[in-house]
Image (cartoon, rainbow, N blue to C red):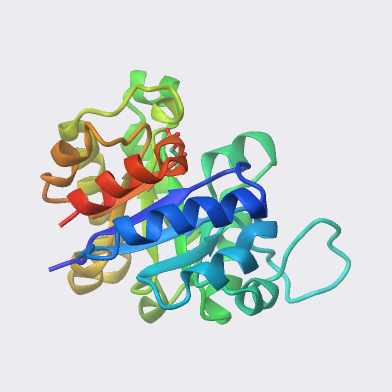
Length: 250
Ligand code: 13P
């Protein structure tokens, strides 16, 4: 049995003061959750979030991590910095980073190595563009992204990693993959993990769905056997909505 994991990806939203308000409102609403609960906040919110989440069942994550320990990498944040600030998780390879900031499978892999080396729990994002789905390339794109991300990653480390399947056409569009589409592609991703690491790792790996997941569609998605949780953007910015999603993930 895989324990579901619901993670909010706040993207570039909420100042530290707003972060405190949201977590203060959220914590009592999710205190009885049976899934893992994570909020992936902007870098400048991590310390505040960690302080407010201490003693709760909410873990804090970052939204990216540098591929180097330290050095001349202007604008980057290292894994050690994230850990010291209180992050336990980190999102890697989100489609917005791939689209707008030149993230590639190679850099995703390098960031994943760095996260694992420093004891962060990675959430690696993969997913196809609309044109890929329409031309029947969904499985191929996901296969390439998963294979690239996990290059030279050991089975022991792969086991600690969560994958988020996020079809790019479903992100922020209000257009969700159907329950069956999400389940089918996640099943395919699991089969790729099985080819890379064998059945035990594949069966144990948690694979989330992301893309316009909300309080209304969570039950249908979570009822699918391959879907182990969600990576939630817009709906994670409201305590009530995010709590409904968390509490539906059993
Ligand atoms: P939305 O839930 O806003 O569609 O965003 C999904 C996402 O990109 C989470 O990482």
